[in-house]
Image (cartoon, rainbow, N blue to C red):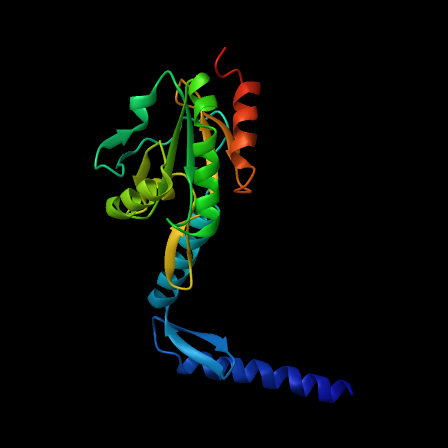
Length: 214
């Protein structure tokens, strides 16, 4: 048994030396399901760099309560531009949603519509945001008599800044999430899970708890 084990040990060493001798300068080997494969070291470095950057992007932290809210400038359903700076000294309900005229988005928008007088009483501005364009927003707002701006984030920059951009089945859209922004322009609350039918009432109650309207 000792002789057999020693023989196998020597065979592995000789095989490794022979393999290394056959690898050209600047190359190395990697193991895949079909056996060893030669790759340029520069190629492996590039692959590793791309992988590391991807991990870093995925590991990027979410929006943090108390941080400055990311700025934006987007057109609404009439083509008028809106920026976060326009609403300084007011509370802002910035709600991202996936798509105009889809069931959950209709429910959520109409709940905000039905509570609009209560939001006005506490000086809170509602801003809806999706990837839909101005024309789509105009039809959506008119169809459901929505009395607040719907912002067209067609390139997804605002969704990206707030960490809500996603993709499914080849389609990109914003996750259904909401941010409360205080009069100083800081993130006061982040809703990562939203129930369209009850969200407006929840936001209204939370704004009051945060001191809005006082």
